[in-house]
Amino acid sequence: MSEEPDITRLIIKVTRDTLPQIKDKYPFIYLERGRLEIDDSSVKWIDCDGNVVRLPIATLNCLLLGPGTTVTHEAVKVMAVANCSLCWVGEDSLFFYAAGQSPTSNTRNLKKQMLLATDKKKSVEVARRMFARRFPTADLKGKTVQEMQGMEGFRVRESYEQKAKDYGVGWKGRKYTPGKFEMGSITNQVLTSSNAALYAIISSAVHSLGYSPHIGFIHSGSPLPFVYDLADLYKETLCIDLAFSLTLDMAGDYNRHRVANEFRKRAIETDLLVNISKDIEEMLVGVR
Image (cartoon, rainbow, N blue to C red; front, side, top):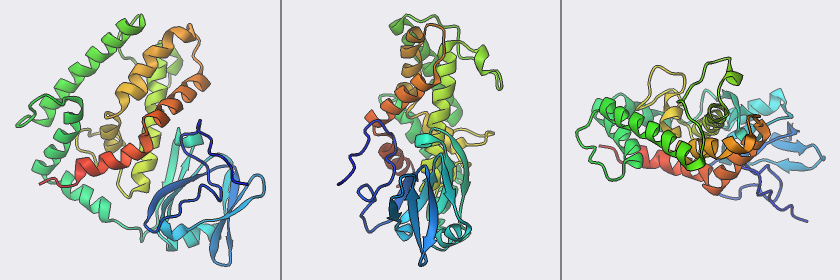
């Protein structure tokens, strides 16, 4: 009997019925609460209920290993030979911890990203495409990245103020002090945590598609500039509106489970995982 997918989950965990059946490389699959082992030189997944699923490693770019996952040394060796990378993530990839890549993995997308980023004219064109998403009616031709960043900063501040009015929330500006999460207002706490969840999901997707999170086109001087570039495409709905919409309901008591569930719901409704892949291609392909 087939298991119905859980529509409350952002990333559907693997069963025999949800295993991708396609010939081309599939970006990633997500595993949690089970063990990866080797059986006759193939990789098998044994979940917490004892169900066994043989994984088509040769057709996968990446495995996302969620909570309760263990993997044997031999399984890692076989996946390395098949150019299937590994990412260690939290539930539904709402946290991103680490990535492991094979030294023989396909570098086609990484090379394309590097060539665009190191060409000043092409790099600005990629940035312009990203800004055009937030300014669909503006004429951005000829504007520098710094000028467009200025426009974006003003737009985001206006968005904060408008959302505060829409939801009747007091707002004194975006504030976050590393290591002092609890010191922020409820709105700022939700913004910080939902931003982190968004960064984690994008990091997983970027790694699984063979790009680098460290090579950006707008952001610089930060650990994950490409992730931050992409995150700005989705923050308006997934983070900013979410934060202001939840503030009054929480009544001064931050609830991380409520935030995670509401973020997950919005990510599903907006088809985030599919859009990340499409948007990267749209931003990078065909730039001259």
